[in-house]
Length: 230
Image (cartoon, helix red, strand yellow):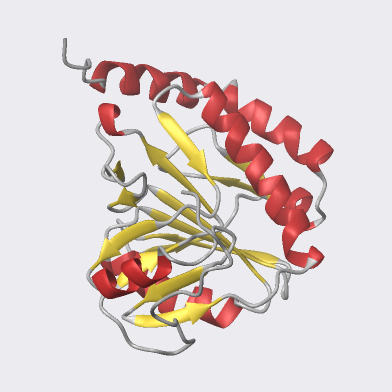
């Protein structure tokens, strides 16, 4: 959407304010596109300035997610995409992978060019936001049907990984690779991502894309596809 940034918003959004999603969405739509503001558990959260510490591992995650998207027909990777989850939750996760609408996904595109419903995977890159991501956001994602949740913890240099369908907190495999359950073949090297090393992360992803599990997943997605109306 195109917004005249010289026009003052009619409703001011304040960090910590309580709002319903409809009111929040209307107010947020008047802010510049680059403004990152979220509604979580009915509370407005304004993002702090983004540091290089956050941006570089985020870049690696986005690179890997985009490659997986390109190699897996029927899924879509998006970064910092607005998603409405409930009456009190409208979020902008650092990254998400979703099954596309026509392949049976529950995170669906709306007429307003936003998304509604839970993605199968959400990823947050956490530095100053770690407490928020591991508590309020984790509760929100679990309560609203998100399949898996991955927090890249830059403070403690580790991944926090949750399968909300089973209620498990997961750990990377012994080789240091996080093999995402909901998206077979989406293999993430913990060390490479934390070290901001795209070159080291790429062979791990390529191995996942060459796996039998990924081939079976692509075939399953193709079988689920609903043809567009004629």
